[in-house]
Image (spheres, helix red, strand yellow):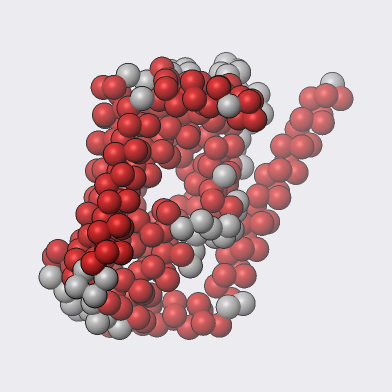
Length: 329
């Protein structure tokens, strides 16, 4: 009886902490940073006055598509641990998104999805989340490397041919290395197990060797499709804020931005807010675009795809139960 009471108290306290911390971070981000607040004020004003404001609606409609594809990935990933319905997979993704919002490098995403599992094999759940994130990283690096090559050959090749060639070789090696790791997960687990300091991580990632090449291929394709949706959202916002480029420049700028965000370490508590913005302003600055317009589009992307769904995810966080055995899917 006391144990059950303690569990309920800890769960309630945890929910209250997540709720208050999320609301505090939202308040701190919007109202206590004058530059950010003024930028968002300009975003709203420009959106309402622009003839292209219908694009904002299209971007918003793609939000559930974006996270719906992620739910498809999690349904496939979670099937190695227990049968999971699409709705429960979607719910898990939303819980993970909210908890990831308030933790560095989205570490809370692991806890959020694991808490939604009925199985006692929570350690395997961590490995499944890792596999999904790794697939998305591979998709981002593959597409981002192609976009990054545009900037290398356009702006740096003539002045720094040696350095440029070195970067090209590194990008090729990086892409090949990530693909080898993705499709040879069993070898990766064996490698980790052979290194004594890392051996304790094996129970966490062992599940990744259970995914077949066909399943990994499907996961990578879903990751690429989700990447395409995210890219389309960013390009539509850039067009709305009158960033005028040709299609290849849009694609290269956006993919390069996502690439830099993925490879640059970050400890931000706000889902890497700032890394993407700096990357976008730098790359699109090379294309002679106004930084404020690019910043507005990038902040809008974060607002729609991260902040708004994170707030909605609080509904699912508050409905979490510690003991999931026998719960309905």
